[in-house]
Length: 459
Image 1: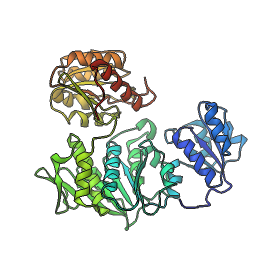
Image 2: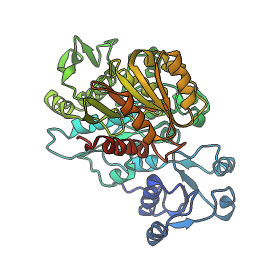
Image 3: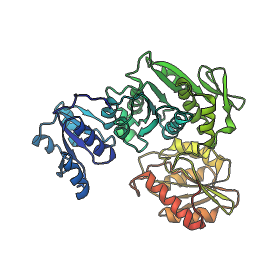
Image 4: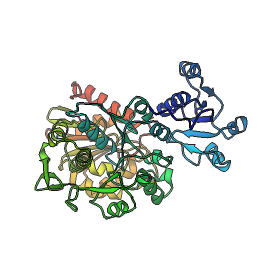
């Protein structure tokens, strides 16, 4: 960990007591800052006690602009999920108090080079694939994965050395708050139209994603999906060396597929069917990981070994188990339409789909063709159940069941399915109408499938 004095004796407010907030508080104390922490909800007494033991003052007051009157803050470190139209944040901006995020501070103390990964879909899978490859056949150091993947960046940047590597999954919420974060290799997996309730416009969302490369220079690398013209155009705005990847072989200057084989430039790397996880999207994810691995000098044998044993990431088209000829998959991370399209296209026409969730004002016409091509039956719950039912009807899906909760959905999916079918949870919506997180939703699905089938999750 680098010793920096940027935060020494500064008065800093950490907003949000989730993992990133608590770890940001600890790191800032190590950097000799004066730290206050405030959350929308009162902290549990044991958590509060642990923070106060290291000198973090917990402000139990409501998260309101009044806090700014009571203290003279030099900086605010906010949870990435807190909107910028939050009243406290708006007032801080008005008062010219700088606002940052935990991953920014964590990156500043890192001795290890950083690989940054962003994209609307596939970030976690790409980050995990890269990390697995970098740790394969390694003789010195270690690769760590952190960030939006569920591990705060500061837990790894404080212990990693120059011999190590750090792979950071970076969400648009994180990237909009950075100023100095400088990955040596940045990956843009794809860009759709997500989180417009947060970013307000697609332009703002795309600009947030592109911040991953804004501090790069000609000594760095920008790995970009070239299968979309817009993404090819975005690559022109980076100062870094652009390394493309392409399932459609739009470019052969990086990683690409030809005749069911994967190449990096002109060099054969592995066969497509050697990638263990199913679906075209996972081939694209693997291409991004391969491009990074080749830039970092990894051997083809290390790449092949890692990707041929990679079993996928929990809640991302995750195989759960097989019972009575039915295969169950958990894709709870599909919190948008595009992710569900990708999941459905991983299978043929025998999918019994479980979907629905938080109503963010979207409509679902884009799913009509995928429903028609892949879905034989569908069970729906959550705020968007009626909207999705209308789309399913237009797609010609004959068997549509509307239910109240996940238990009823699993029961109906079992009743509607038969041997040879795929039962897929891929909600196409955020989980917050009934769950705190998409992980909680996926875990409940797995638990209910285990109860229904009498079998245990398979690894």
